[in-house]
Length: 395
Image (cartoon, rainbow, N blue to C red; front, top):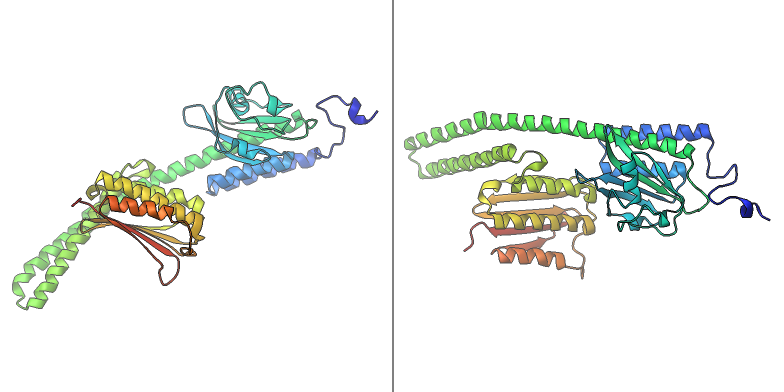
């Protein structure tokens, strides 16, 4: 009879290739802890750090599936932020209940739980995903302070390769360490946000107290000097200068309004939304687009046009991320002369011949419904420039 036929189910022979030597095993966990903490505190994007957490855990424990689910607000539910390996598609983007899922059971327990057969585990009852072809699994809560920040789930295909206490012990410490590092990174970002808001208040005060007052005084002085000027062309130039000063004052007032009203990510105005949309597109684009905002965006743009601008900007940035293969992009939203104009320009490969145009057709349709138009151009320096403009008052 072979060794396998007499070995109890759920055990492996001594000296299995899966089990690393203990000193090296501990050293690898310490290295992983240090790398995750350094990445978070250095300000790396959270998706990249989550990928590092799952990747390091999978490599150290040699698992076939890795899933990281984060607690969603006060709901208690877990949203899968990252899944890699076998049957990863079963989990990606899923919302897991605290009761009725394997990951949720670990969050409820507040400690690691294991299973010898993930696909048939009786704790999965609420329509949560069941990954076929996977056997032993472990789910470890990521505990920070008194709360559970998320759950790290790992699984293997080999039904005999169960998780041992020697493996889950360091894994619990690793998950907790990662959770604390994520919380510290959140506090650092909050502190940076507070500093940014204070700086915005200072800039707004300086613009109002210094720039606007000086521009206003300069305009008054120029207007007063007009009575001494007899040359018609000179008078016309001075009048144009006064108009330019007035327009500059309006732009600065709009900027001050945006600094004070559109604070942080909670701002509800169009200006704040445009800033958020550009920030949110960075992971998909792989770079940060430049952004320029001109005019009284939050005061002169009616709700119907603002809603359309939001949709058009999202569609345009998505098109750049999916098709342009660009390295830079510029977004400009200008409100001037009774017109709102949104321009998105990239340095990518341009519009392919015979390519799908359904996205552009949607943008054109939105413009036409508001009495505006869409234009697509190929700048001399390369890439594509999409310009969407509509009047602010329907005729």
